[in-house]
Every structure is written in structure tokens, then in C-alpha cells.
Length: 248
Image 1 (cartoon, one colour):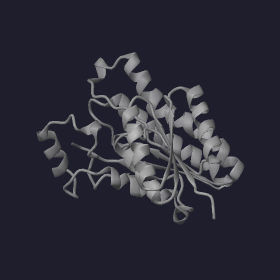
Image 2 (spheres, rainbow, N blue to C red; image 1 turned 90 degrees about the horizontal axis):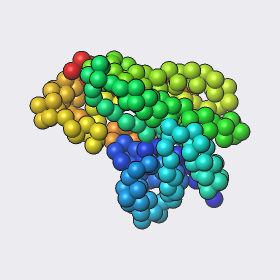
Image 3 (cartoon, rainbow, N blue to C red; image 1 turned 45 degrees about the vertical axis):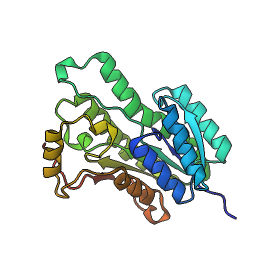
């Protein structure tokens, strides 16, 4: 019997990360689920995966902390005997006028969204390089490609994830490792539920598919990018946004 592949998913306790964890588990992956503050949600994710016969390990770490990431990756590698796929999903958002963004706001945004992806990719790629194979999937945002008003630091951090993806793909490609980026549109998660009903209606009306995205829309794309069938796809930024123009 062949060994299960392992996926490490950051920010796996909620939203897109949680659904990614469930869908990868359904496809037979062992799941290394990272979380930081949502311990109860992480425990319920583990219980749900294991109730269906899957395998899940929980790893608490702040992805902005390089040492915490090193310990997390070493722990996941030790438990599962390798990491085949990394989904860099952990992220934070904040809406503020540009002149109200503090140094602390900016540094934390880049620490989690950009440096967090860097930290995790750096540690996991060491394992993948030894195996001459692997998949790194970074979660950016449509705002990283078009920019979002009142989200300058968020948009900039997500644009940095795109730059990381394109450069790293070229460096790791000769070793059989693909690096791709998903740029979600407006997804129906807790992060976007602070919008007013009026704003949500405007977003839906600006989306040709006439609905918000779901975490499953992102999870199934991540599954495809992790598959053997996607072995010749790398350095790509794939929008999963229902065709929204980004001008709302």
C-alpha cells in the first residue's frame, strides 16, 4: 500500500483553509493543519477529518515567526514522513484609510501575508528539494492584482505573494517543484462578512457569475494544482473570482 501524500495548510482552522483541509483529506491526503488562535475550531476540524477515516495533525504557529515555522515544519515532517504540498493560506485583512495605517498595522500585515508565505515556503522547499518534487500553492487575492481602496497594505502584501510565486517557481522548477498562486475574488467567509448588505449586493452585481465565491471554489482549484495533472503548470496566478472586474 502506497504512503499517503501530506499537505500542510496554514490558517486551516477557518474559512478557505478549513475547507481545503477537508477536501484534501477526502482525496486521501494526510493533513498537517496549522492554526494560531482558533484552537476550538482546529480541534473540531481534526475530529471531522478523523471521523471520516482521515489523518490530521494540528500545529500551532504564527507563520510570521520564522522559528515557529521551523518547528512546525519539522514537526509535520517528522509525524508524516514528508510534506508533498504546501498551501500558504494564512492571512489577515484590515480596512483603513491610507493615512490611518500605522507602522504596526503595516508590519503585521506583511508579517503574516507576505513573510508568512516566505517562511513556510523556505522551510517546506528544503524537504521538497531533497525529494525532487512538490507543490507550493500560495493564496493571494484579486486585490493583489488590481488594488483595493482602503486596503493599501493588504493589497501590497498580496501583491508581494504574487512576486514570491513567480520568482520561486523559476528557481524550484528544475527540481520538479511547481509554485502557483490562487487569487480569490470575494469569497463568502468570515473575513468578508463585515460588509453591509448593500456592499454585498454591489459585489454580487459586479460579478458576472452573479454570486459570491465559496471556499470550495478555492479548495477544488488548489486540489487540481496539487495533482499530477497540473505538473506542467507553474509560475501562474489563477483568478478564482467569478469574472469580477475589481473596480467595485
